[in-house]
Image (cartoon, rainbow, N blue to C red; front, side, top):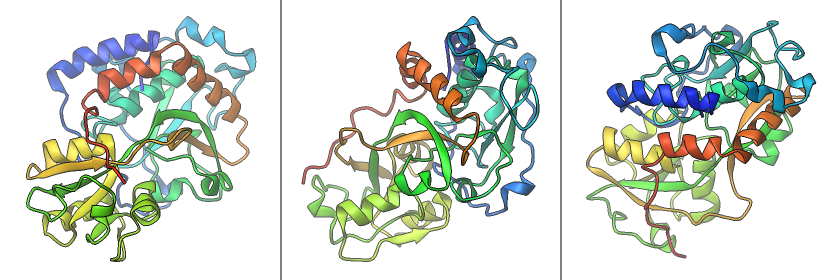
Amino acid sequence: MKLRSLVAIAALASAVTACAQEKDDSTAPSSSSAPAASSPVLTSPSPADTGAASAAPSDSSAALPASCTKDSLATRTKGTLTVGTDKPAYDPWFAKDDPSNGQGYESAVAYAVADRLGFAKTDVKWIVAPFNSVATPGRKKFDVDINQVSITDERKKVVDFSSGYYDVAQAVIARKDSPIAGATTVAQLKSAKLGGQIGTTSYQTLTDVVKPTHKVAAYRTNDIAKAALKNGQIDGLAVDLPTAFYITAAEIPDAKIVGQFPAESGGEQFGMVLEKGSALTSCVTAAVDSLRTDGTLADLQSQWLAKTVGAPVFGE
């Protein structure tokens, strides 16, 4: 989540982050089940206090069709791009639970997309959109949402997605004294008590790929799932790989990444969510595609997700 002029965002964000970054609270979408309709507005973006992004859109917006520029887009509020995400907003996707600071991969990508569409940082308004309410039918309070939502055929029946901005790998973490701490194959996970946040592809990976003999424990939020792991109620927890690194490094230091599941060609990706039939979908996709093509997404991943390399891959 960041860009060239966006990279200006990235560069500045990096500077800010060099002093401040870390956090990465938990991982996944939070618990709140409040309807998006009542979503509170997050801190208003202030380039002056974050320095994370340029206040003016870059020339990169010129690369997109004229119909995909700020003045032409039918956003919920003219001249404003309203972006939803959950709260807390976890590292490494966000930083300091403040999506508006431009730090963390998804915050950076959001501002990069906004920039490509001609929105200055001050034109971006963040609102809280609980994870469990995002990929559901109905009207949305946001123009786009970004919150580690995997693109699936089932979800595409009720919402639109941009093209993928991140290729997802799922991983299993466990306490170092867990019976599966030394597992190297998927087969060695089958008899374990495993858990994940319900409604996520992490949970689905356990049920579809591992197919454990014990029913996979489903938790409403990752925070609850992590507590279950800490308390020894489950042997292992499935989360996306960047989240796995954060949890084991900052939240549960006596836990480790047991392994990640083998990547699949054309596999899972995170995409930005839009209301079904949104007039903005093609333009947001064009913006994401341009960020991938010119290397901005790769740069942002290097900046914010560089730690997510080297995790062992499960054999069969």
